[in-house]
Length: 409
Image (cartoon, rainbow, N blue to C red):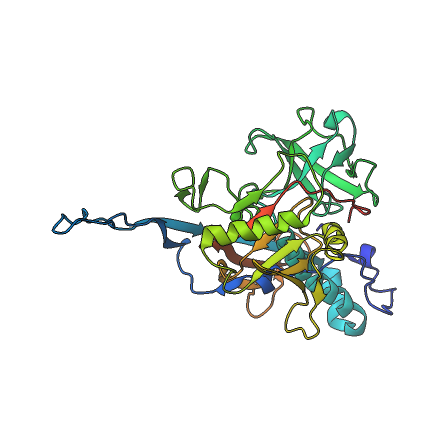
């Protein structure tokens, strides 16, 4: 944010009638779902997980030798803290007017302060569903750098006026350059892609499939569901998944080709999780998270197959559920959930560790710090936290699902 000043706000001449008209989606559900774990000191959390059973078991003949003693195998998982920050800036003029005309200017300062806190929560909710790399969209169309009008697969985390890094699809650490987003067209095109308008053409090296990453956040974002619930044979939370394939989630994909949601996909997921865990259902229930467009498919599905029934009495977040012989599923819609995917989460195994709660950094009781080099005051909010999972095999996801999107926001 460049700052709020007298010219842009008009504090001396403007009387605020109904406050700021809200046109942004600030909803955030991620904090209400996961388990809280606030006991955290040091740079990371670590714990032990089972990776293999003891094999010192067997049948013997009368008087036969006992099996050679063995033990269960363990490995150490680690989750490292992540830092999220946000700042606002007001000029000396705005602060002085606020001090002398509180009924006029307080609305502006309150709007800026509350707005930044809402923006951080919204930012976190968007990252909650992603993979921790900081990626918010993928370039579509070819060549992507031909003009400043570029197609992307998802524009919900592309905010007008924001700076985004263009990074290589083969190696996200390779930076092609940075661009400022002007705006996002409201309607998707015929292929379901979003049209974005930039202040200048993308870097010449940019190509279809490259990543748009939130500025400064590459591999620093909070670890989201797309990484927590996965089966990739790579290192995750310090565990070598290739050597410990049981430390994975069930993923039902279709090789990158989208297909319709069917009742059998639900049942396959339930059956797979039951088979992997030996339990009919997770201890705290299984929650399905999907975006609003995929929820349409769920509703069309259950009318003849699943008999969804909304809860008549709701404690906490309102959800709908359906019952099968393999267990119960709660359906929850979140506008930031990834396109073409559904997450089946056992939130009793997913933790949100917080070392420092989201709040304003204060100096002498004030959140605003005066600059010694220019006539501005700056306030900065920060949180230190991370998401981690203890038992990945209790969760799963369905990928490559068809959906029809009608708005880019």
